[in-house]
Image (tube, rainbow, N blue to C red; front, side):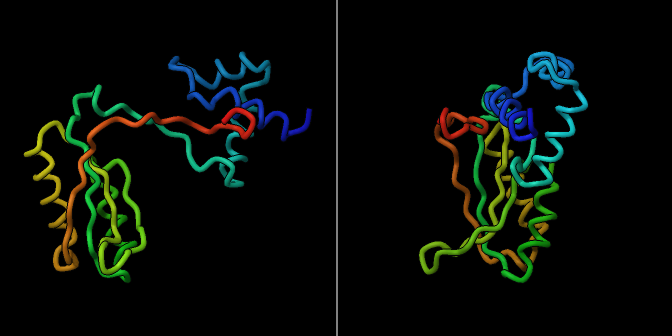
Length: 161
């Protein structure tokens, strides 16, 4: 079996997520009848080659009590967006933060940061913390609140999409 066959087996077995067990990679190795070190090496190689961007937890914030989830959008100077995004992305209440192109004149925002809180007041406090980090580079912002949960899925191969 060549590496591409093993990679495909791993992707198919994990596209619905890793099993919720203490040792998910051991479980996966047993399921696929492969050594755990082969599973780990192939996952690392797929990440290094850009086949997999990342392996991470995708929590259901609503079930955890975080009912106020909003995409905060910020207008910051383009030459500072990467440095400022690094700082904002380190905040514990920001799940992801990224740079997106503006769509002028309707959409002046270029820095996006998803925030999660239990109350509207907590969101407002979080936005104030982000604004403090941005300082004079904050040229305006808004927040777009989630109104429903969309189904999140992992990788799907072309013949299973």
